[in-house]
Image (cartoon, rainbow, N blue to C red; front, side, top):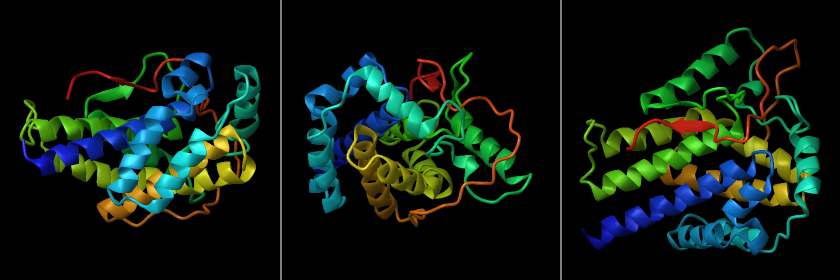
Length: 259
């Protein structure tokens, strides 16, 4: 394998690490989740991944957020969980809205169309919400987990001449990443991250917000799509029987097959 291919695999896996950490970080805190991302040890793995991406010309701001994450000392899990509820609430309409389709036009068609489109991306790659989960497919953590999956899949394809046994190609996966960023995650993710930073400027979730903002900005520049706005209005609140935004302790997306 050529040095260029090896470098591309390293870059893709580094992005997967950061997306995975962001997905876990924006789920209800538990000691298991804090341990998984190394939060009490200064996020060593994700900080190394961010430094790698900074060296790969993905933005000097990426280097700065790596240092910021490493300086964060999370409080006890009970206090952190209380902060999570304060910021994001138990439903889609917390202080900071974590669900994509709560942002944007106020009409009867926008939300169901967007939810169907998001689900279509997941299903195209054989993914579906965990059975019994109340998590919404447009929750920030769910969309971040999908980006983690796409980057890991790209790394696998790079190691296997760009094609999976199922016929899926590197080009198809890269196109899905680009359009999902443009149409969904980056469309609202930067506004979401900006709100988190504003509401928790020196806290644990604020540090995650800074990281997510830098990641999405750098990733949009890398794939050549316009980054979403830093400010995006939330739809006026109406009666809503959509399931709660925060799911069970299980993963938001269950991967049904290997890439």
